[in-house]
Length: 451
Image 1: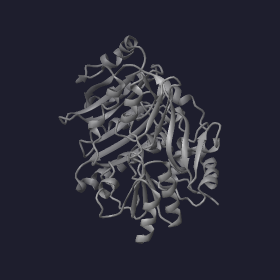
Image 2: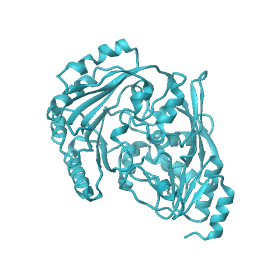
Image 3: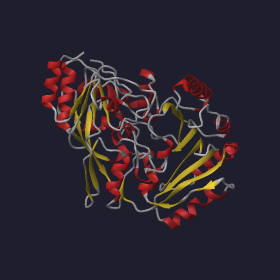
Image 4: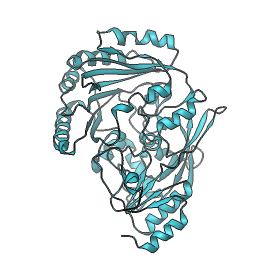
C-alpha cells in the first residue's frame, strides 16, 4: 500500500488525474475490453502527455511498483493492467497532427484506429493499422500491426518513421533511423519491452474508396471455402488482402466467410474480386465500394467491450489439403456463437518482403496466420470455452509453426516469448540489458534482461 504522502507527491508532479481504489473513475479506468481480466492497480495515472509518463515511470521505480501501460486496452492477455501496481493510462493522450505535404502523421498513443483514420482520411491518406476501429494504435503497432493495407504498404510498424519513448530511467528519447537506432529497431515488434512509447510518427499513403466487404457461406461448406481461399490467395496482387473463417452472424446463422479489401482502382477491384464472389453461391455478398473509415469499423459490432475472450494463435506451416481437413473439422463447433474459430489471415506482399531481422518483428515468411478468437458473455461458461479452445488447438499442432503473432495470444510465458521473437530474441535481450536492466517493463510478452 502507498502512504498518503507518496500519493500527494505524485499528484503534485503530474497534470493528469491520479486514481486510487474507491475513487470515481477508478473502475472504468481499470476495466479493459477482455471481460476475463479483473485486476486492481494500487494507483492509475491518466497521463496528459510525456511529462506525466516520465513522472509515473520514476514513481513506479522509486516505490518498486509493478508497472503496466494501457493504450487502447486491447491486450487479450491483459498486459495493460496490473494487480496492486501502477497503471499508466495513455487514453487521454489523443493528439494527432497530419502533414499532407510530407504524407506523415504524428500521433499520441492514446488514440484508437478509428480516431487516427478519421484524421488521416480527411486528407485522403491512410496507413496500415488493424481491422477493428476501437483498437489502440500503440499496442497494435508495437506488436506488428496486420491490417487491410499490409499487402501494399507493409505492417503498421513498417510505416513508423520515429517515436518518442520514455525509458526505465524516466528519460524521454527520440527513436528513429538516425537517433537511437537500436531502440528504434527494438520498439518495432518489441511490444513495450523497452519503454513507454508516447507518440508515433507514421508514413501515410494516398487512399480513396476501397472495394471491400465479405462473402458468406454456410459453415457446412468450410472445406470448399478453405480450398478456394488457399488457391485464390496464391494469385492476388499486393493491393488485395483477404481473411476468413467461421463465426455466427447477428441472427445466429453459422457461416464460413471470406473478407476482402482491394485498395487500388475500383474497376480493377471489381474484376479481381469476381472469382471470390462467384466460386460458389453465397448466402450473402456484402462486397461493395466504401470509404476506408467505413471498412475499418465494419467488424466493430462483433467485438464489443466486456465479452470474455481467450485466444490461441500460430502461423501455419502450410495450408495443404490435410491442414484444410483438420481446420474445417472445428468450424462452427465452438461452445459459443460469439467466437471466431477457426480464422485465417493471409499475409503477403510488402509485409513479407521486409527482412526477418530488419525489425524486431520476425514473422515475415509465413503465408497464413491462424487463430481461435473465442468469446463468450457468461463468466460461468469460461471453463468449457477455454477447454474447447485448448483441445482444438492441441489437435492442430501438426500444422502450425512454433512462432506466434504476439498481438493475438493470451499469457503464454517465457517459452512463448522466445518463439514469438524467434531469431531476434538474443538481440532483444541485449537491448533489454541496455534500456531496462531491472525489467521494470515486464507486463508484456517479456524479454528478460541478463545483467
